[in-house]
Amino acid sequence: MRKLLILTAFLPVILSAQCTSTLVSSGTYGTAQGASGKAQYVVYLPEPAATCFKGDILLFAHGYIPVGAPSGAWLTQLALPNGTSLPTLVNNLGFGFAASSFSKDGLAILQGFQDTQALTNVIAALPIPVHKYFATGASEGGLIAAKLVEQSPTFDGGVAVCGPVGDFQKQIDYFGDVRVLFDYFFPGILTSAGGSAINIPPGLMAGWMNFYEPIVKKAITSNPLATLQLLSTANIAIGLNFSNAADAITGALWYNVFATNDAHATLGGNPYDNIGRVYHGSFNDARLNASVARFAADPAAVAQLQKYETTGLLKEPLVTLHTLADPIVPFAQEPLYAAKVAARGSSSELTEIPALSYGHCNVSAADAEGALLLLLIKAGI
Image 1 (cartoon, rainbow, N blue to C red):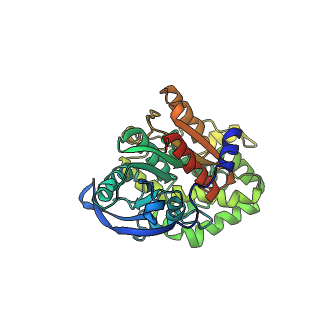
Image 2: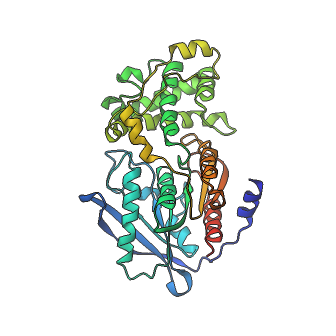
């Protein structure tokens, strides 16, 4: 890990800022979902192409977009947390950049895989001489990028950022655990809206931003002992600053509130299961485990969830980049994926980079450049 950090810190930027980023194509295209499936797309190239474009294009898969979000919401993800434009950063490294929405919002990993694959057909029809395609993505898109590198012969490698690449079932269980443990340590706040951890009422979603989230944050800051127990039992990362607790907990709860119902509809039932789970880290674990709400998963949903898992079989290079203190997709996904890759004999194709920061996908421009440059090296470009 230390060697990787040193390497990425000193990798040079291979192109200078005289290259500009130019939008060369945008519009909508039919996806693999059929005539009703439409996705918006953008394609950016470095200019002047003669000296800046090396003929390789990076396709970006965006993160989770909740059902009902405005059209074009995905475009806000084409920038790093500090505002750095992803097309500009990628173009300055000599890559072309392309991205699209998906034909479905919500849990859309399968659709994102198919739609990103279909985007290569759009690019192939443009007057762009493409040598190789590479996949990248963040959060949900990070899982999509990893699956594209594993399973699609179109892609010659990729970068997966803060994705649940190791075990998607564990990611589903993490969000469920955060909610049931929050309800135990802070009873009556979210349950006052009705429903449960696996059945989110419309009123909770509609009132989240202006009513429930402020109440949750106030409860977290006013009861530090309960907050500490919640962080411990749910394994929520906050970095080295306890003041991150409110952001971390509400961030994880947001996914329970806005992703649960769609996941049930998409998977054909409830995938979350904590029957038999033994929680540790409270002041009274016996009472906690006897009293916390329990839910059993629907077998059909669990079976469907297998389609969302990575295989660990890599034939092309994959670089993963993940913040160590990620409260949404825990960093533990990285060693889980490394073990899966090792079991398939593919470890030589995997490079994992930890980002020393707090937050979900809170990577810097230097982090992203380092990951992309490592991909160039691994791919022999």
